[in-house]
Length: 344
Ligand code: KG4
Ligand code: ZN
Image (cartoon, rainbow, N blue to C red; front, side):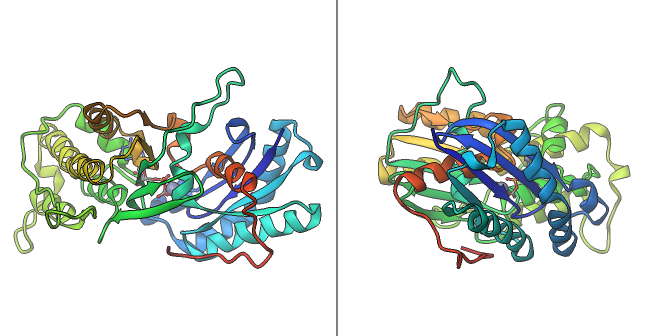
């Protein structure tokens, strides 16, 4: 039995988990900082780093206690060391190095985005181990900071084939939610409001870039929503001037426009590379419209799709511990010089 403890501090969630044999989640402690950042409408890096320092030791204790796996039974310590806010990453990386050094266990640095693709291969039920995918697999990460496509030959051979050239899809959800007065982060609130709206009431622009591109662009959509809701500069109006139905229609039409390029880029990638499965992860993979779109695309190509249970869509450490199992099995461990890297 291989037990891996993982630490996640890339952004505004402090998380620690212990996972056995790459899939069985023994504990999954997550502390969200949302309340600390809400008043600023986004994550404040300095506040986030300080909160990680304050909370991490308690979360490590919680995860160890919940799992009933003593520290001496751990086979490795994993940590998200890229990409993320560098001050936040440093906190997790320093803690993981300290544990690995003190306990003389291997240290494994994990790419946070690759870990999101592993969210669908975790389970808390010891009787139902998830089936691993057929490779090559197409990976889609849709989160607050990223909208990326990956080519996976295995869980340790992963190459990015597409990314956003400006805003991430989650960022577009959050900015639209702010314009609609729904608070931060607003992805889930947009989804709820969209259920009462007509997605075809407004035609927001869908940016596809050039005909061959696997990249994404969301800044034009964000601006179009702003102009639609607030009017152009010089003739601005407040959202109080809009009816509840108009607001719901804007949420639904935005969601349709945000999801549309996902389907088109997935189809392009499937046609180009002939992938045998599709893996999805990241906070926006909690969105039902997006999940439906991915499922339809997978059905069209006759391949299975793996999507995380809702608890493993947003940031967590179980996905890191699960992926680390495959790196450990392949002998891919890191030295105590493991760097914290903001962008990849
Ligand atoms: O993966 P994640 O927890 O953090 C990053 O690595 O960025 O993703 C957070 C993002 C936020 O932008 C949030 O608004 C979005 O995921 N999100 C959603 C939903 N739930 C969370 N977006 C759309 N629909 C949802 N149901
Ligand atoms: Zn994430």
